[in-house]
Image (cartoon, rainbow, N blue to C red; front, top):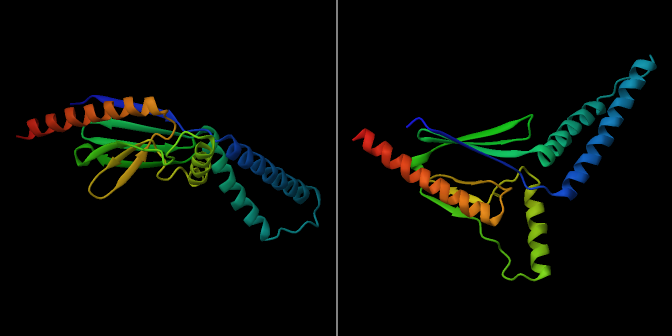
Length: 184
């Protein structure tokens, strides 16, 4: 079975985080440009080790703002492997899982017990707090193996997540039974 299936989903946009990290990154970038301009213009300007901290902090903020603005998640199903890729178009995190090692595919269930405005807003705030470190354990679909629990596709709606779960379960059943038939 050499069929390759690929799904790519942009991450869920949290506009408050995009605004905060975007403005902060622009301000730090301008500060660094001003420092560089002063270094070249004024020969008496001395390089301070604190500027290395500015450069480091700028690069971290820049990566976060790229993640919040242009980030995506992608899975590639090829043969008996699922490759999970999370990227901000500069850096990528990749994880490969053997498709037959997956024990279950579940949907993430909302924590709020009611549809009241207050419960929905508190759920959004919790999501935004969890979204900060690269959407760790924040996807709509949960892939469980014996050793890991991986969440994927943060940007899907509830209906899309249900459809994607069905597609993944179909592929899991099709590829694992075909793999076992070929090995027998």
